[in-house]
Picture 1 (cartoon, protein in one colour):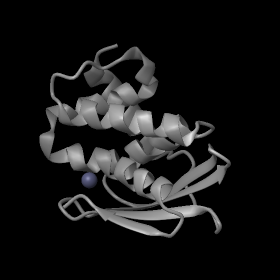
Picture 2: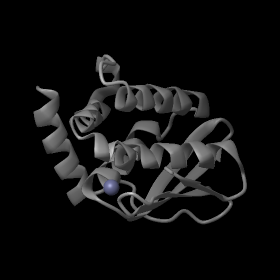
Picture 3: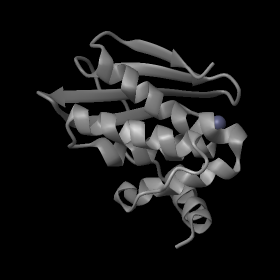
Picture 4: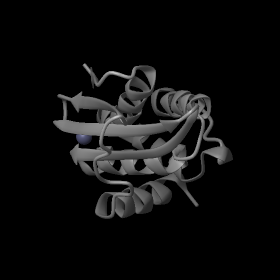
Length: 148
Ligand code: ZN
């Protein structure tokens, strides 16, 4: 399937029916992400069991790309270790920001996010949730990140 078709189908699906949408209560970790360029604002919640992400969810308002990316992200990192989630974060960041970066098959559905490279103004929409997750994993206190 072409990245472009995958992009359209997966973004539409995950925007319409976001997965893992909702709040996790403390002691779950939490971070807030804000993309002032577009107005996207997301809360990401993570509950760790040891080094493993037992639960992850998000809530907030944003454009289709920011919501779909967050939904895809929760599916991708749930059940992973924090180190694995960090590796996925770095991989996605590279795919989103380096236009000629290869899109590895191991990315699965996340490969759809590479479609955003055709719309450079939306890269921050797609990467917002990933920065927010990264902040939530990095500290036990609630965090706040902005794409600016
Ligand atoms: Zn956006």
